[in-house]
Length: 103
Image (cartoon, rainbow, N blue to C red; front, side):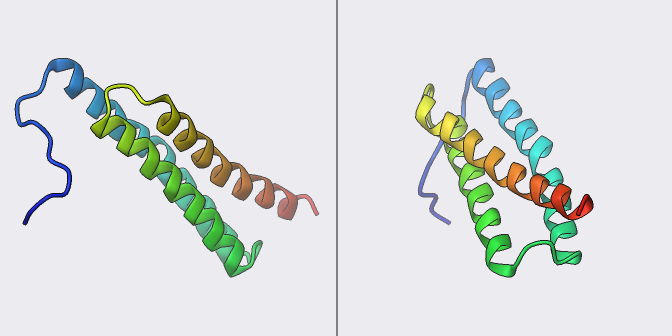
């Protein structure tokens, strides 16, 4: 299988630490989003279109953040937009759930 992006096989300790942190960041945010998404769908808090949009925004944010960490030494645009989109998806589902809870 030919990869589109290829990394060097021999990296430095800083690159390894950066990749470990990228995976840790993924593990911190994705389970929370999936739980919120499941609860929002189960309780019919949001329509299907809103759930798809929230999921797309979150996935785009995670993709931007992952590309920044994996293939660039320093790219603040991808990192910042990645985290903003990640937070936007999480906040949208969180606020919708809170409105549903306190209505």
